Length: 571
Image: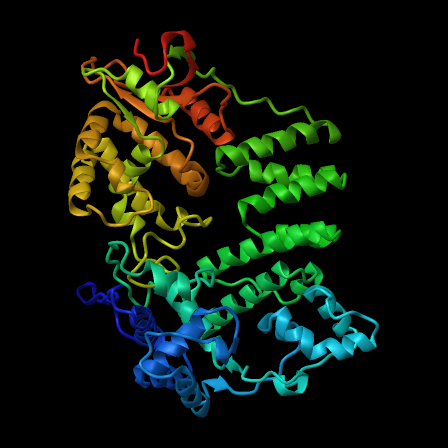
């Protein structure tokens, strides 16, 4: 296995090349061979090297089939004009080289997926008629009737005379799934998502990828992921949770695989509860460290009237650092449980009122209510920017850029990541906490301004999950750094890290700067704008509650239209 050299980033294909998908597939296969070859068997390496050594037409057709859904294909329906050889000839060569099975056995479900109603009706007309059904039965009805009398698998020729139709099965698909997993770090992304779309559309941070930073260090870890994915697929297909439970891998010491196992147990618990297996649901959630699993466990115990057990678990959880949504959910449960176990109700956290005000504006000819409010508030000496979730997230992303792109196991799998794969996992912050503290120290000693502006210049246009480049001008950043105190930035950044997935949204729409005010006065204010009939969402309210507690200037502006002022008029 080699170490990734930023100077030799694999090139993405030119989209003007009709075979660009093949070039991108070859990039993926070579990357896995070079960086994960020690996790492949000798036979798997041999197959991948054979794939790369094929003639272009064979590789291209194989890539097309791998990108499609399933393993069975109608040979007579395959048409790819960019290939320089007739498809039947390519298929014959792939069959002779054991990449395709020429006459696979098909069950009734597969047969009905591959052939149309118009093709199936004449094939089974006599059979259906003998059973007392007419020729014009719908496809679903036909399949249901035939399934009572025809079972098992058989070649197409034994089902019916299909004329020129021919079915082939793609061999070695599990190997391509394994390659896809080691490249992406997940099986959520399909080949077509990446090979056809993602490569070459963004500039990516060049993260050093070493043996230590790989997601998988042992083949057993890849097998564990594939086993967990098989469990999830079965749950999605409706297999009873009790049957899937025995297939769930044991706890692992790989942090990011453990996080994925936690999510699997969360979903298994959900399915078990829906299926009436409450004890299994509780067991699954108790074994999961996912934050949602804890609330679900407590709520189910409450519904089962196991109040003492729920109270004890809630008491342990209450000592942990929680996001606002978790705290809110836990407080509500404790409030309900207290009288059930003879305890005093917890004292609700003190809240401060949210600053709210109204404005009457002429209805604009075009544009949103946020833009109308921004234009109304904007002054040359007190400029307003429509930033929503982009400014605070962006400043955080620029300050903490080295931490976000730190090479860590389970974070980066290939050179085309827009951000770390573990960004929304439970342990994203815990694994990087000392590094985040180094960044926050810059807020204390004043170095943060230079770091943010230098990063803005150096990384311009490079993908970052917190940075929306078109929304962040240098002027806006400089004004924000001048007017927003470092202490306020740190306070908001720390809340953001409590739950990255949840807290990246909900920021107020506008920010107004007051650069001419004295240092001791608030020199900015964030403003959430609500038009007629609109109201605050929960995640917006939680940010506003937080701002009120922390003394961060923020308010809600309720806009009402002045219909008497004339459409498009100005005050």
